[in-house]
Image 1: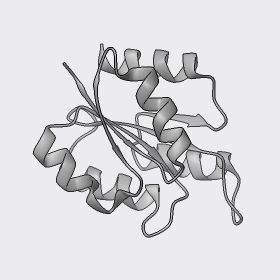
Image 2: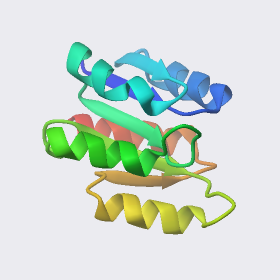
Image 3: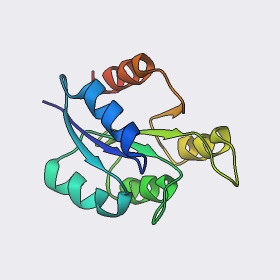
Image 4: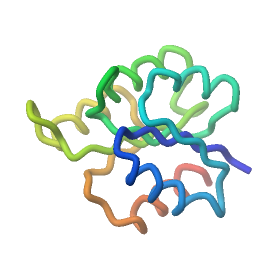
Length: 123
């Protein structure tokens, strides 16, 4: 079973994404990205779904950290964001795409769109 790591500081978003994917994928959740690389190494993660705007460390830093170690074929990344005080979601997500996120999705999103995007990357 493919493994998905979901990272978001919004616990409700974590629950919704996990619930939507857990029948088809083994899901791990983190409320912040500080331990993400350790989980990716330990659990052989296939896909990371990460929010961009988070305290402690943002999703762009996490994408950079992941890409220093894993190619876009080894670990797929979906960046999600609703933006923040400084920039719009589109701005953050465009940067994430340039940093080699495989897919980007603006919040709020339809669960069906997320599921189809995950299935596309995992096929």
